[in-house]
Amino acid sequence: MATRNHHVCYVVPPYMLSAIADSSKNDDPIRESARHALTIHKSYCDKREKRFAALCAPRGSRAANVHQRQNIVPDHMLQHIADSEDVDDDTRACAKRDLEHIRSIHAKYQESQGLRAEQKAGVTTEQTSETTEKTYRAVYDAKNDSNEANLPGKVVRVEGQKATKDEAVNEAYDNAGLVLSFYADIFNWKSIDNKNMHVISSVHFGENYENAFWDPEIAQMVYGDGHDFLTNFTGCIDVIGHELTHAVTEHTSPLDYTGQSGALNEHVSDVFGIMIKQRVEDETADKADWLIGEYCLMPGVKGVALRSMKAPGTAYDDPRFGKDPQPANFKDYKITLEDNGGVHLYSGIPNKAFYNASVAFGGYSWEKAGKIWWETMQSGQIPSRCTFIQFADVTVDKAGDLFGDDAAAIVRKAWDDVGVARKS
Image (cartoon, rainbow, N blue to C red; front, side, top):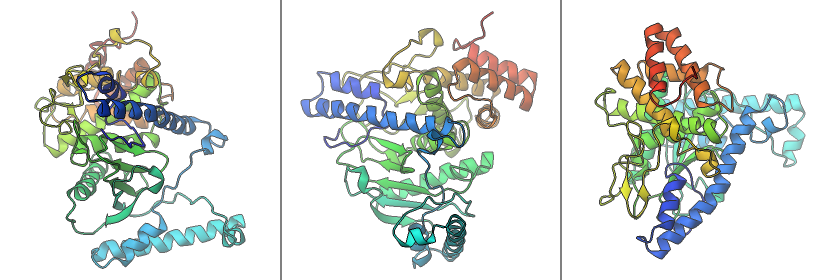
């Protein structure tokens, strides 16, 4: 665990950090690092909560405009791709075309707003969010700097370039591509925002930083290298799928990052993260292990993953960071002020429901259960403060719409079996 951590995010949940900080089995520097990470966690959690609250605010309101961000590929990145000699011809041509398109859009926007003179005087303006025709990936090296203000770092590999000698760079690049191809191939969804939004990643963040996260304000992935307990974040496709899905959620049904809606936010990321992993490994629902972060734990740790969707509460049991505390049934749900109302703790309940439905349907998880959950997020029927039972009801309705009454009954039973049931 790094002593200079600047950010804590959701690959490693806060209850695990608390256990590390409290365990007498850990050395003092590790415990102190975990305490520091928990302090930072609060500010990061608040940032994500504000982000989703802004997205859920009425359009045109002041709150809705607080966290607007650029949704198009930045000029400097396109210029780098267009000028690079080792990018393939097709990608270089696309970058030049998109660069010209974006600059023309900016010119028209500035002219219509009377902003040209202001920009020449040094006044910056918001970029428009026009759709580009190609998704661009770029991976940067943070060079072990833990100051987020210095991100993304030094560019190492951009769309169309060949593999580098840095394994973490190549894994971040390739696995982001696998996530994007899953959304495109299975759900016809273009990148993160359905407008071919660029995907930027920074590797080697901090000294021995044992975490990875999607930052909603700077709109990019950030990866640490890991250390004593946790590692291989760029190599865990389900972790990357989980984090990038937080961004997809922003563009489908933003869920307030608190209480049950926050747990559903985390649940949706686990659902799509696990489906991406199962697609890469070509596993049907009944054959898959349903483990999130399976390859993040260092050898010697008594555990199999960060979370289990099949059996919440069984992923690990190690004296150095405690026992997996996730409940698998709503009867064990308790109101808490920790972790934004238990957003990581209670995501295991809907996770188990999705597992139940997937296995009951048979075949690949994305064929029926995944399609139902996707249509649920696209439905416009998910309120920002959605409860478990509200979410369950919409999934049952979508199951019926897509596959008939028998499918609806399967999904209802999946929720009933985890205690998320309509009162008789």
